[in-house]
Amino acid sequence: MFIVSIIVAEKLQKSFGKLIAVDGVSFTVEEGEVFGFLGPNGAGKTTAMKMIQCVSPKNAGRLLVFDMEVDTHPREIKKLLGVVPQENNLDPDFTVYENLLAYSRYFDMSRQDAERIIDELLEFVQLEEKKEKMTESLSGGMKRRLVLARALINRPQLLILDEPTVGLDPQARHLMWDKLKSLKLQGVTIVLTTHYLEEAAYLCDRLVVMDHGRILVEGKPDELIRKYIGTDIVEAENEPIVIACLEKNNAMYEVIGDMIQIYTSDPQKTTDYLLKECTLRKITARSATLEDVFLKLTGRKLRE
Amino acid sequence: MSYFQIPRLSYRVTKVWLRNKDVFMKTLKLNFLPPFLEPLLYLFALGFGLGMFVETIEGVSYARFIAPALVSVTIMYASFFECTYGSYVRMYYQKTFDAIIATPLSIEDVIAGELLWGATRSCINACIMLPVIAAFGLIELPHSLLIIPFSLLGGLVFASIAMCFTAIIPNINSLSYPTTLFITPMFLFSGTFFPLSVLPEPIQYFAFALLPLTHVVNIVRALTFADLNQFLIFDFLWLFIASLIFFVLSINLMKRRLIV
Image 1 (cartoon, helix red, strand yellow):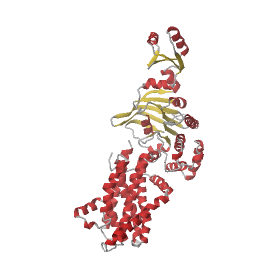
Image 2 (image 1 turned 180 degrees about the vertical axis):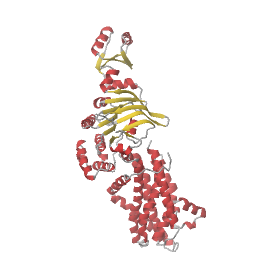
Image 3 (image 1 turned 120 degrees about the horizontal axis):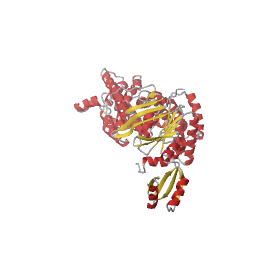
Image 4 (image 1 turned 90 degrees about the horizontal axis):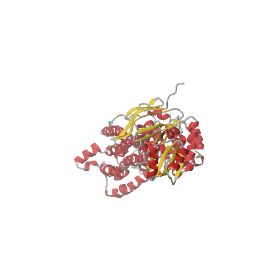
């Protein structure tokens, strides 16, 4: 069967004045997958999202969404998209229900269809009780779920979420994750950006790590961890004797402040060896996470 | 990007208009009061207060002279403030435009919808004010009914000019500049409360050439007096051409501001 990729980007570029926000990135998103964009602030994730949404024109390269050019077919593409922006831009002049109703009109939905779908969506995001409330009175999690419901009003085939769980408490975050998982099961293709590495590891089938407008790596979360870190990390205190010991054995390690992280796929052996050969006072072994990959690739320098 | 590129609009412009209408209808009673009260205040203060000292002006009572000016000013205020403060709040604080352009609507559709809604606000205010003034017997009927369709054109001119300011100002406080430097002088020097002919000639020319309210007042006054003349065609053309120019310009300026 011939499968068309949902998004195809080739050498996509976008600059704002002198700043190159997205610097020749290429990626594809396949039907039905959850694809993540990770990266520190200013990495170019949101800019990439806005180009896919056809609201920010690209400067160079090629970008096809549903096999259509973003420059020439924005209306056709946007008809099939659902967008959850970084900032909640609900209409404060309207109630929860009216927000969805007004939005349905932008997609040319009949009032009858809209009313049916709105009832379904309010149930899906668990906001039936809040139907008549003004959006100002909703909690952060509720607002986020209403934005999600709004993004689903046109039954999109592709859902774009820019930091979907930013600022939510753990309960609200898990509820959001459940919703996204169930949308994936319904066959919706999902593209999301996030700062939360556990979120990316939990939700994404595939992801890219971006920094300074470029894609550093691409792959499945667990593959990336194995490739760049190994399965585990052993942490020891930063002492010259440990370093000397590690150097002697060509171990893969990194010094972070007063701690040393040793990347390994056999924590048992590493721990045993360190305890035996080097006189260590304190040592811990843990599973490697996506966060370790992220910090290794993008560095620990603060981005503001 | 050119400032006068012809915008590609779709029927979806109406969806933005509908959104604003729905919000307006939610606060209908609140919205009705100002255009209803304003002419009463002005008529009492100026028409019957100051008017005591003015026997006649251009052959009519002072109240009759300023009645069309009050309608013209409400046409100006309604769309100008809708498309400055109103649109700016929707654009910048509420991010309403961002939400809408994530759907099949383009930014051109959104701004055009805002402009048409601004013109509609002028029409609504004119419709509320006319019966009040008519109740005092200050306008000729049925001629004055033509003010209702005309208010859409007048409103569109001020809406489009307002949107140009909204597109270029750095923050909402800066909107006090066009208000003080453009709207207030027009309010006073467009043949509103005294005939333009008493002003020095250069100022008369200035008012004719550059102040849209002058042309609105000319047409509205001719209608309330039921005294039409051929010069009104010039006023009408001036407004028509201005509305086209600023309509296109404001959409392009907004595009430049919002699409990066």
